Image (cartoon, rainbow, N blue to C red; front, top):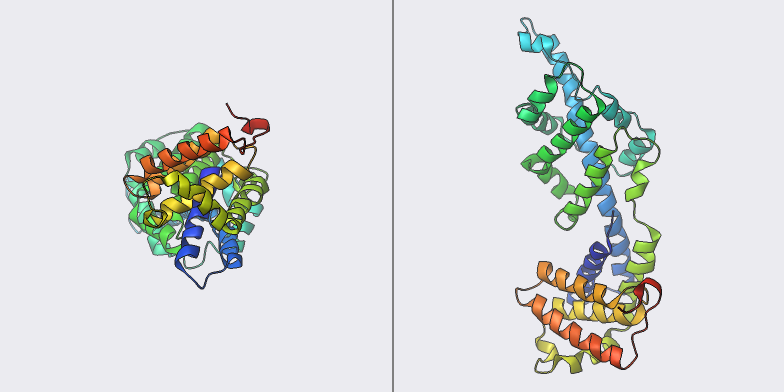
Length: 311
């Protein structure tokens, strides 16, 4: 689930924290990095769990309708198919998934009243009305309604607040988690260790992310000395802190990560600058990195191998 760009963003944010807080030490940010990486995965498990709990409200709804003294025709026809279908049940009865829910404490303080409000809101959608009217829904219909439910959740204020209250990485990781959620729902009914596909991988997390964090910290002064001459009319002290951090990280990639193509490094940090720094940062980062990259290539200091070979 974690892309290298998301890892770069997390490293950048931690380096910014380290820059602003004199009491922070490298072991502190390394610990925070590893915890943050797992938060993305935990958010995915949490969202999947909330979706399941919302579908579970259908059974409670059916029981309430059946207990009415004078049930309406709609009440009599109602079936908790949103929960009692092979796709949803594959998740509800998946021991491995439920163990992760328990491990990450996803059910703690999950208010049933809030889940019911979300469920009732979804019942009013045209998607649910169409689904409920099907005489013999097929697997594709169950998958579609679960995707429709997740789309509904993604724009529901209660659901968003539930996620944001527990996970401060919601803003940064929302699109990553959404991609993992949709992939999981499209593969329903789930089986095996389906969630492992979205767990942090050693290659992305340790070999790349941890090393980028470590190298950028260790060689901070050396990186600055390389960047300063490239600034030309800019004073290094006047460069925005976040922009300087991105330049240091990019330079670190160019010099110490032989399998990452130079163009990938440049493009990635330009995109990150566009999304996380000032309006002018994108052009500034692009210009400095382009100048720095050409200088390093001409002096033979950038050595790439494998997929990182220069184009």
